[in-house]
Amino acid sequence: MRTTTGAHYGLRDWIAQRITAVFMAVYTLIIVIALFCGIADSAERWREFFGFGPMRFLSFLFAMSLCYHAWIGIRDIWMDYIKPVWIRLTLHSITLLALFGYAGWCIEILWRL
Image (cartoon, rainbow, N blue to C red):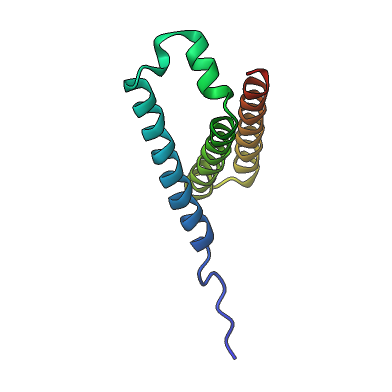
């Protein structure tokens, strides 16, 4: 029996990028509609809008989706175009640290609301 390596490799990431992209598009649409409805008229209304439990949760999911979406894309760029392993691993590490930092920063902002 012949073992094929690499079959369907990347399918999970491809699907994950599509799911996160759709979620981020819907979230962006919600924000645009909220802006047109006058939610951003004052800082207090804006804070109240994002302090609402489901919106805070959706904002958290948006941030995590954005980080995961970015990780898949940037990781694939590094894997495709950076051939020296030590440079690629360094770039992977820097990218991961930056994305974890951004996610932590987002959680801190949402926690303060």
